Image (cartoon, rainbow, N blue to C red; front, side):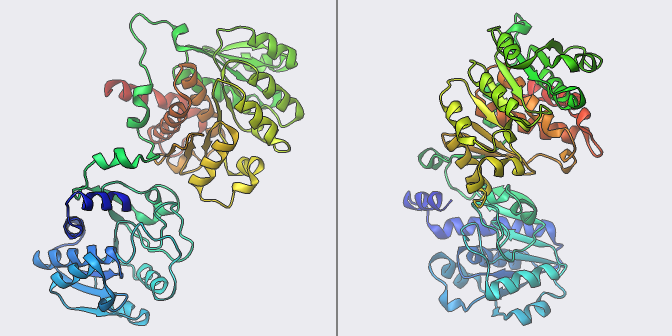
Length: 487
């Protein structure tokens, strides 16, 4: 965002013009949140975020609001555009000590947090931390300028105190901190507004981080044509575990079929054939025993995507089965037990992944991630996922409420549509199956993983409160229908 600002200013737009537009938008949103009789406290920091607050104060005062401008530091230290905005404000202001802030905020109907914006890369300390704490304890709704103070705009982390906003106004593009936790919760509802930065600067900047929305992958997904048939949509295989743990693989297989794979086969140990057969209809079933049985199955070159891991079991046998699958020409999803089975020798897995042409998608949750990438855990979530993708040679889908999908080429997408009801047994198995189904349709792996995460979240929203994993595949149908209707 700093680069976008600088490029826009270099092309002839004054910085104070951008600040004026930003502050005007903040004032408009504040007016929506507070009646004309309401009192608004604007808490301003020493940089450009405070400058946006000064502009907002002027516009709100002109609109008839009662405005209190509260300063973290002496305005004599203001520089550049923030100093200009302060000089143009024409309103009284006061430097406030933390002990005085509580009294200043009493009787206010809205607080505008203009302390620090997305450029903050360190924890709040001293008076700034005390300000955030007092604002949060006030019980007054907060509108944040850019994003909630204390949140790192690049990582979403809040290492110390942070303001809890109910709404934020940001400019030109949202920041990773608006989507990554805990930043997403601290920023509240986010409005992204145009302040005159041309979209052309994005081509020069070349951003590699995206919010996971259909515009990211929709063109890579092909709706079946009139003359098509099921073999055009690929044949996926999901590998089942033993008789006592077959449900996970069936959930995945059903989701794989619902995601659009033309055919799905559940590869079952002989001992589990009866229990699997009693539950399956459209998903086909094949008895597969041991590594030799897997090799015989993969001799069928019509198969083009594979999923192993859900309920398969953690063992050396599993890691050997994965190795056989990686010797095939199929796209592969490694989930759950297939990941944990490599915790003692992850580098051997990564070497084999990097030696193949067809893509591999890894789908770890945090616990599985630490087993494969223990030295990356201390990094922020975007860096963890990117580092894991680069090291493994695979697409890495790092699960969570703020799932991140990362590619070895540096691209990353943050998923933000998942409802909390998805935190239920079997949900991850469904997600793995959706990825496998999209890979069967020959979608590029990064786009397939991103689309799967979005579909999974949208299906969760469709199914609603109280959902269980079995509800997700049927709930995908109206979601996919809407994608078809709005190409």
